[in-house]
Image 1: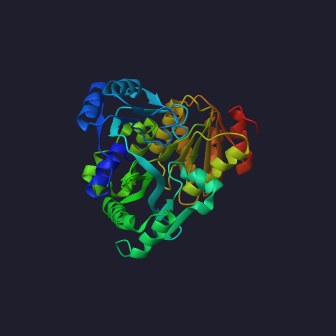
Image 2: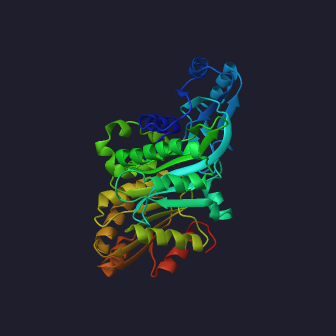
Image 3: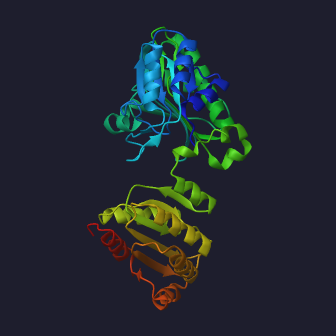
Length: 389
């Protein structure tokens, strides 16, 4: 689960992580009142969506009067903001964050992540803040520093020294950096977050450290013990199909392609999507139907596929290990009769009772095409969707 910037900054404040003064607003009038209450002569209005790249997309504006704050808020609220991370449809803006403008001296990058490769927590830092870290990693990887943390809670002094050196900080700032790092570490552990990112972390001209932006990703599996954080969920920032799939017990992620995929096993699902891409198509989703797939789950998957206007073919790729292919075939036939997907359906079955499953398709006399071999099946799915294979 992701948090909005204003929510992440609220969480930061609980752990003593310094943030600029600001307020959330859901109407232009609230935005104006927030600016007047915050005081000063310059404010920044930020659209609140679960995506980066807001500034380049017109979602972050500097305003020099409360009236201008209201105008910008009026332009953003109720609209859909499209960035390079949102996909072509963009995301709805239901709130803006009004913040006092900061006197920026330097912009840095800092994050704390669950580092699965190293099996620990790791700080990732760069003196090149304000840019997308992926861009820095691609063009200047030597400018990124990764510092793993030991398993015991807390941030050792040597970590502060390493990161302070990476940030080219003077000695007086190291104490503030140590406090900020400690707050981030406690925040991640106590909130069961998987990632906390500050980009940029600024050093003001007066030498003060401030988290100018804030990103927090929470572990969904731990939300049951964080009622306050769980209440911050904003379903409007997700594809509605993902919520429907979750309620049906399906592992589903919406994508922007035209070939709907239903696969059992996350690794096989990823390989299937790669193969579709290789053959000239684009997957419309990731969907792991799981090892205990039922007819009801398969039917719900077909219902989700049909509701997506971009889908032009459905590719079902099942390897029968735990799940039996004939049971999957039974579910597909039942789903086809109930939902009538309206696009070509290509099925690849291998493994336990695959022969029986293919025979069931043939006997059903439904327009379901079975294909032998993963590459051939992927090519057929791409061609059926009007692709290049």
